[in-house]
Image 1 (tube, helix red, strand yellow):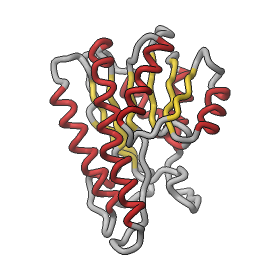
Image 2: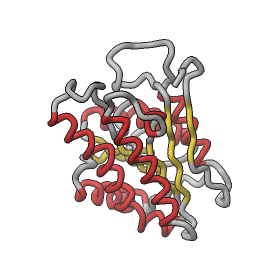
Image 3: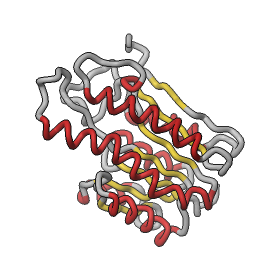
Length: 229
């Protein structure tokens, strides 16, 4: 793989995003890392080998101008955008009365509008390279969970992915929805042996992008073997 290929990741400072950045660099990509935490992003850039391999761009995906700036920085620094992984998102407590309205507001904006903004900002660059769009969905986006507005946001991302795929049909741009089950990330406060590791999802992401150009892996479910739902 040419070292000119560029992989943009939102929600990159930890969890699935950071693990995917490591796998992408190992595969020969240069990575552009978007998240709100500048300190974590800067530390990840160093861990990935420095500025020749990675670029940190402080990004709030709920702000359109931040998404535009993220893609522009990727093009200005590395010359192109080949893969965009709209991964930023977070969850909420289950139960319709168990989370603050303010938390709900921020979660819906991040998980749904943020993902849409990231893809919209990237599409012109991806059309030029016949690149790849990936979105982080969830098993919760295929099965309604009791009292879970988070589940509702991931149902929206599931539909969004297919809408994007159809909109880009014929352009050469591929679209993949990555739908994990339980993953051991900062999303959870309590460690568990019954969850996947972020690297398990990162390997699924790299599998999708490594296919020949005529192969479009539209959705990947990845569950821990012990998960019932």
